[in-house]
Length: 282
Length: 279
Image (cartoon, rainbow over the protein chains, first blue to last red):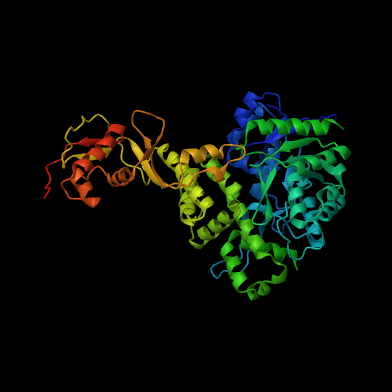
């Protein structure tokens, strides 16, 4: 079994798990340092863990709802604790978002059981939510044996009641907790484009020294909104942002989140090379 | 606005987009929920629900790669999946547990959703039916549009009497297309698919998996072949087919010659039937 060991001298490059992954690493042995797998996928398909015979696993997660008001079930938390122990992931990359919320009484035939989504939502960007994140992070502090690091959400529309923008929100969470950051550069670009702010200027306002892991993937514009798209290659803007981050920080890991390999392998190879070059140039 | 309440309303709308339609029509409902409608971009939330459902269909991407590629290129993905989310919710149908069934359900929705008078929609309709036909013929159980398996060892009936019963040799799916589906699939594999260069010209295609070959053949057929194959069910005789296609029960020589061409292609075989009345 292989386990992730941080290398202070360099940023390790990983790939998100998806169809075609095994074939890719078979024909490109040694090219990537680790595989990132969602905890939920590993929970549902434990046999995927066999991949750890070839590569260390870094766990991603979307179940803790750290920016939400509904706590995850004990069973979910216990299962995550178990996966952390098995994989010896160096950290848990969790979304700074919510995936569960209170039920509402709009529908006559519905009670107030929580609404559980299958996709994380950008929370209200406000002091109230920051406080909630702080409380949730404190409640998880002694639960996991590795750090929880928080990933910036993509913002597609203004969330009612928000009083700050994404950079302010992430910075405020970072200042009130000791959490590291999982900086998803595609999410960052998406948020900047949708909220019409200058991404390159905005990224300089983030506490980049707290960035532990970086995500790189694609996006596309449809219906007047820029959307996350892991089947699309990263844009030039994403690589510009990566260069900007690399000039100021030395993250431990960079994951290419191309978990739907429907674009040519040559693109993936060139993006691995380009990412490595940008991170090693500094 | 209270964050907890905002999250609850947002999550409810994303999970059930039919609520969003109601809030659009009656903003007072949002006020009653503690949300100021002025600051709530319902259109964007509606579209976001489409993104969440698109992601839930990521596994289908492997079976319908060209379909997803075309939806992305044409900018149709988000709107289509948002409509699909609302459709499934309104009809009370949960998403299927298996990728194969989820694929069938999505294909059924897409084929009903498109407006064939819009060229990009027409191409989407073609590629989704093309890829679905391949999925179906690669899937063992009998599925809609697929005919029965029969052995191809029946000796040729030289004169093709009206009582002969045509049977599909293997399994097929037939489609009327707006373009050449193989050309379209090839274009969608290119880095920059030249969709504007694909000629829109109606044609009939038979996807055929014979009992002898594992590979699926895509055969362009004529209008006669399309309608004849659509009527072949292993029990209708040549006379029945002739009548069903608007002719007399005693088929014309041209009719039987056309059927024989399908036999020459290997698509049909004929077994002798009991004598039928041809009056």
